[in-house]
Amino acid sequence: MKRKKSLAVVGGLCLALMIAALPLATACAPGPSEGEPAAPAQAEYKWRMGNSWTQLERNTSMQLFADLIHEYSGGRIEVEFFPDGLLGTHDELFHAVMDGSVEMGNLCPYVHLLPGGMLNWMPWTTSSYDEAAIAYSAPDGILYKVMTSAYEEVGTKYLWACPTGPYGIGNNIRPLKTPDDFENWKFRVSGSLGFVKTMEHMSEGSGMTLETIPWADLYNALERGVVDGCWSLWGSLIEERHYEVLKYYTDLGFGWDCNNVNINMELWDSLPADLQDVIFRASRAAEERDFEAHRRIDIEYKKKLVDLGLEIYYPTPAEKDAFRQKANMMSIWEELCTPWLDEHFPGQNMTKVMLDELARISAEVTAAGG
Image (cartoon, rainbow, N blue to C red; front, side):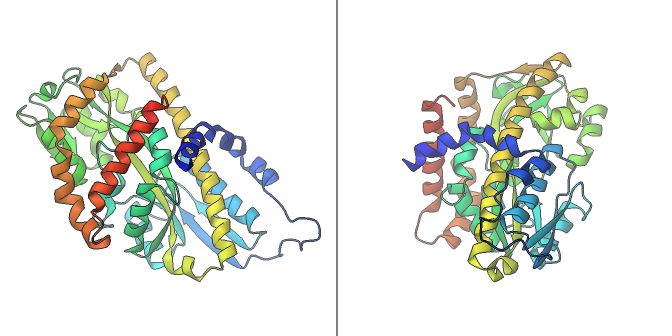
């Protein structure tokens, strides 16, 4: 029954948009009941929270999170949100949350910062908002459980998931419909080993070469022809103008992008149970708002991209499966994931547990029409 309810959560995410406007969020947040003392004049805790990127919807969700913590705690916690890299680059923010000089932040689990980080976004596992809403949900979602352990290893507490959506593949050579269409491409990759190895496997025998290029330099690399293709997101196609330097885009959905809002672990452990509950309640509301906002904006972006002239291909399930089969994901899991999982979940065969649960979620969402 809990799993059925998980799907229902997705359908109800739109309710969270009703509190997206911050003044309205303040008005709707529960205040003290009759007879309860008024909020203290001065906060007991004053924290900072950062996001290293310029992301309108994400920043709105994080500001909502900060405001709800203040309201739900009766003013005991005051969180000042710093968007758009005001607290530094991503890696600087990550280290600041680890050491407690910044209390909270939106973090990416890159493996050079988080040894278990690859498990957050292994290709060919989660591929839709419906699936992600179950897999990343606290406290029972399989990715939430595993990533909680991964973040604790570096001294942070995982609070809520920030989805950015499914990865497709863009290029300037030809529409991508089969793995053979990778023939002789120059393809941009990052340092995310799970994605790199997946691309190596899917393009094997095609003559495609891989070029490691920082994300910030991707637009120029495509514009100058240094690379012919890349993985990208609906949001990046519009907000980072990738559509201007790409001719074709295939909605392959082979990967899922999701960041995570975290709090310093030592600070979290020092909080009384009632304030931990306050933060979890605010987390769930912000997460629901963020999921629905990004789901809706992806729909808008798809329509806009057609008008802008990008040629979009939507592969059939059978065509997607051809890419999945060639990716040979089990070998990648055994190489990259199993050693870490066996160390942190000894005797549990967690690789099989995770893959079985993610497959179950996918089948359940498909059966429900998601």
